[in-house]
Amino acid sequence: MKELTSSKRNTRVDVMKAILIILVVMGHSNSPWTTYIYLFHMPAFFILSGYTYRGGSVGEYLRKKFVTIIIPALTINLIYIAFYSLMQGIGKYEIIASGEQVGFMERVKGLFLWWAAPDFGGATWFLLVLFWIDCIAVIMEFVLRKIGKEKFLCICLLITGIGGYLLTVYAVSLPYYLDLAMLGCFYYGCGILIQKTALLSYIDYKVMLPFCIISMMFFGRFYFYGEISMNWPTRSFSTPFIQLWSCFASVYVVWWVAGLIDISKINSIFLWVGRHTYCILIMHFAIFRCLFGVAVCAGKAPLIQLQHLTPDIEISYGGGWIIITTVTVLLCSAIAKVAEKNRWTNYIFNAKAPFGV
Image 1 (cartoon, rainbow, N blue to C red):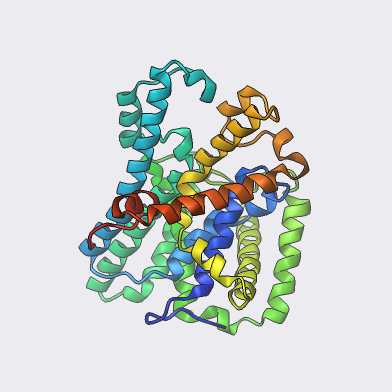
Image 2: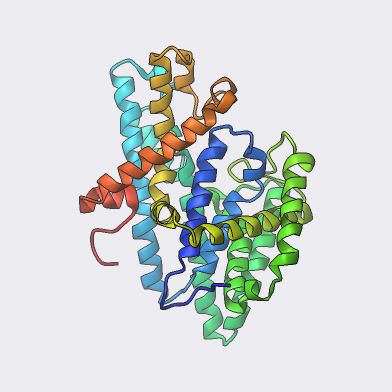
């Protein structure tokens, strides 16, 4: 089993990130596999982030995360807000959105005060949550190091995660998704624990893999059939035992699929996608809307589809979700590739800082 080291990048992690971001797009495309995807896709990202966590100087670490996560996320949302305002200005707002029109400054105010991102930037909530988790982890590590209890970092993160879950149980929503960040700390802490203990190397995959596949099929096909098992933005979660069992079993299956791809001839494609997940995350809803526009012009979808964030079931049915997922990932990847040619577009669309951090 290949473990992560500080001197060599773990390509299996990149491949798994590629699989996960494709699954995110697939889930938003209303695929028939959505129930399976929602068992684990968000926690898996947090687990991988914890698995690759290295910490460091608090000030330097926080600055780096702010520059490479928050600023580009705010920038792309401001671009989306400008687009919505432009559509309002030319009297075409009702084509792409329903409901009351909101002024440019009101949208900007909502973004900065409540992270009320426009529809196109709806997935950026994840970036804010990940930023808070990174902050919590590095600050905790700093404090624990000062008192000589650094080895308790994982325990503290797990306890924080339990606290976050209790907040969701009592329907307590904190500003800026801090409650979700607390919950995410549990999975982040698990990722750190897996890395530090080399836990994966002690697991007999001949026993664990079949068990996890059966568990994943059971929860996706029977237990949660037709229902969303875990929805982070709406704070909808199952009971802790069921949530953790279904999630970790599914993550293990995907981890092994990533391992098979990593040693295959197509691993380079997945490696590239896995290292450009940011662009796919922030752009896929916007690409969806462009594809809806094409479908409307071709007479394959009603005009009202342009007001929707995700495809209606009529569009996804019969394999439409496959086309939407494939084209969206390809177009987002193309945008990421073109964006690399300029340091500022690379920063906005790929979160690659144009200066040292």
